[in-house]
Amino acid sequence: MVVLRAGLCPGLTEDMIQLLRANGIRTVVDFVSSDLEDVAQKCSLSYKALVAVRRVLLAQFSAFPANGADLYEELKSSTAILPTGSPSLDQLLDSGLYTGEVTELMGAPGSGKTQVCLGIAASVSLGLKQHVLFLDSTGGFTASRLYQMLQAQTEDEEEQLEALQRIQVVRVFNIYELLSALQELRDRLSQQVVSSTGPLKMVLLDSVSAVIYPLLGGRQSEVSEIHHGCWHSLQSSFCQKGPYIRSEDACSNTSQRVLHSLVAPSTVITGGPLTAVGCRK
Image (cartoon, rainbow, N blue to C red; front, side, top):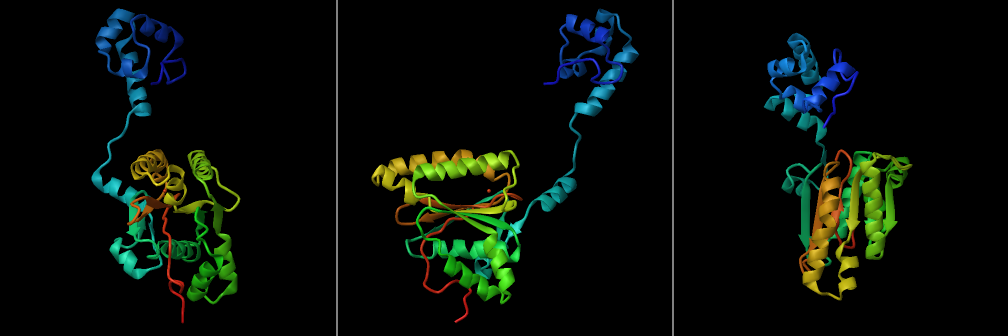
């Protein structure tokens, strides 16, 4: 709440402020919501001067109305759709991954969730030329498989190498390393700090259950409780920046997530076929 002070707007002098404070008017809200005729009489101030001050304060601090068309245009300009690299998956997701939204992918162990993550990372890095952070808690990230995917999409070796350089991999093999990495990322995003690798478009996490489930000895109820508690606060920060995808193991029922950050929060998936997605045979 803005406190009235000299210089806040033309005509608002120190003498006027002292008189207003003596009558219980200390903030901008107090002033603009008061009956100015009554204030003018109690403070022995010019009614016209008070009206002029209120007009300026309203112009400076009031929210201006916006119509639906303007808000829709703003939404279109601030929302990005990130392709997954798979036309079929893009069709299921209504063209791709939307920034600012949460998408959850579920599948049994070995169904190809990590493979999908690698495909999304390749698509965003090569196709959109955006930076990706891959948090690997299972050791499932395979650079050679990712390289195969990039080779399937372009024969230009320079483009392949540039795409690989835009994907940063961080190994987090226990819950403390994972939470530390997520907290550091959250701080960077909240402070709008750009890393040396460039601004992030997506964060992939593969996977949450791999570090939480062993810690609790497989007690499913506690896994689920901690799982949702950890991600609630992170989601509130990341989803303002980008799309957030969560993949879930259908057998253990514990989520693995993918977080897409900056124009938008990521996508997590484990397991995968032997042949890389999109790889030519």
